[in-house]
Every structure is written in structure tokens, then in C-alpha cells.
Length: 239
Ligand code: BJW
Image 1 (cartoon, helix red, strand yellow):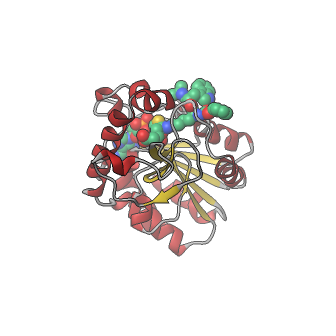
Image 2 (spheres, rainbow, N blue to C red):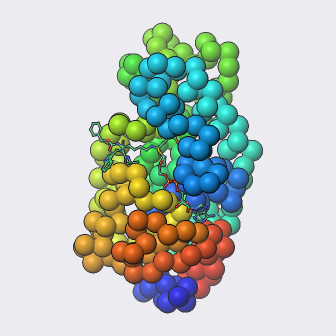
Image 3 (cartoon, rainbow, N blue to C red):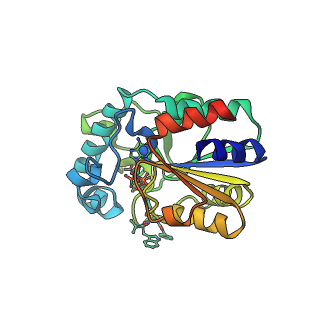
């Protein structure tokens, strides 16, 4: 099956790769769902919503600062690096990621980040202040914008719209692809979860790489069961 998929990749002019938390799992970054997912320890509704931030900003920041610490200590894995090599070696490869951890960038990729980036902050009061790569740590004053409001993580929470321009770019890329690789995502969080189905209806070949089945599995042209860090380098070597 991997050989057939590698053949599809060689023949494709435009390849889109859509990644989720599973691609960073082997770097030691917890996924969201599943037996060791983040949502098992913390309820998403308690932490990753605008309401939660409005109620308990300090608690939500504590969770994000804890995750920043985990991610800062992690390294991109063989899966991230295989994607970056593919982008460098071939024209027409577009990376879309739901991940906010920045590990694709550290591997040398230039992803379209659909759910934002954990290393970015912006003013929670939308005064216009945005910043990248702030070294944020308690004390709490550092988490305040110059306008006096809280700063917030530059990520997309449940109930918030994705940046329309970013979503349009991702949708256009997926619709125009010859091949869409969907890697390490449970494919349940919308609107991103709708991209593979939209692409398939437009005749794009869809391949899923995941250690488990997902709601997408029965709709794809091929499901490669296994870890992103083992399958992606194997495919990249054959392309
Ligand atoms: C491996 C592996 C290995 C493990 N190798 N694989 C339509 C229907 C129903 C609901 C909705 C709908 N449209 C919108 C909604 C509501 C909601 C939603 O989708 N809810 C569903 C959960 C039901 N969506 C939203 O609220 C979105 N906003 C929106 O639609 O706004 C509309 C609007 C318009 C106008 C005005 C106002 C609103 C926003 C969604 C934002 C998601 N945010 C998060 C948090 C980001 C910040 C943070 O990190 O703290 O994004 S939630 C979380 O889930 C995170 C992820 O990017 C996202 C997806 O998770 P992912 O990546 O798939 O991870 P997991 O853990 O779920 O899966 C890991 C997978 O890897 C598993 O399959 C494993 O098997 C696999 N795996 N190890 C390969 N080694």
C-alpha cells in the first residue's frame, strides 16, 4: 500500500498535507483526544473557549504556559522532518496544520496554521496589539497588554471563527490538489474536518495516515495505519 501511495505522490503535481496533533505525538507533545490526550486531564470547555478565558484568565494561561514548557523541551520528529524535506525537494507541496506547537516551523516547513500558534499572543480586548514569540512567564503583569486588558494566546478556541483568509487559502489549496495526505488528526473538529470530504468530492485522492481509524477512514482512497514518524519518512524516500 505504501508503494502505491508513493506512486500517487510521484504522479501528483500538487500535494497538500493536512496535519493534526498525532504528528507531534512522537515528539512527546500530548494529543487532544484518545487515551493520553490533553482533554482527558482537562475539560476543553473549561480551558479552550473564550468563555473560560473571560471567567478564569489566569487558569487558562497557566495551562498554556505549562504546554509551552512541554513544547519548548520537545524536538521535531522524523515525521515533521520528512514533510520539510518533501517541501524543499518538490514544488507544489502545501502544508496545512491544525497544530499550534510550531514544531513544523522548527523542522523547516512553512505551514498554513489553521488554529493559530501557541507562541503568539494578542490583546484579548482586540485593541490591535499582536506579538510573536514572547517569552511569557508569570508574574501576571507580563500577561497584560499595554492597554490594560489581558493578553491571550494567539490560538483559535472552540466557538471562534478561524481567520477567514487563512481558511480560504487552505480550502483553495485542498480543492486544487491532486493528492491530500491527512496525517494524525481525529478529523472531528470543524471546519477543518470538512476539508478532506470537500476535496474528495472534487476528485482529489485522499490518503489518511493514522495509528487508528477515524470517521474519515471509510471515505479515503487509502488508510496507512501506523505512526507518522515511521510512515512519512518511508514515503518521502520513495518519492
Ligand atoms: C497518531 C499518532 C502518531 C496519535 N502517528 N497518528 C460542525 C459540526 C459540529 C460541530 C461544529 C461544526 N462546526 C463548528 C463546530 C464547533 C467546533 C467543533 O468542531 N466541535 C467538534 C469537536 C464537534 N468548532 C469550532 O468551534 C471552530 N470554530 C468554528 O467553527 O467557528 C464558527 C464561527 C463562525 C463565526 C463566528 C463564530 C464562530 C473552532 C475550532 C478550534 C479548535 N481549537 C483547538 C484548540 C487550539 C488551541 C489549543 O491547542 O489550545 O484545536 S481544539 C483541538 O482540536 C486543537 C486541534 O487543532 C483540534 C484538532 O485535534 P487533532 O489535531 O485532530 O488532535 P486529536 O487529539 O483529536 O487527534 C489526534 C489523532 O492523531 C488521533 O486520531 C490519533 O489516533 C492520531 N495519532 N498518535 C499518527 N504517532
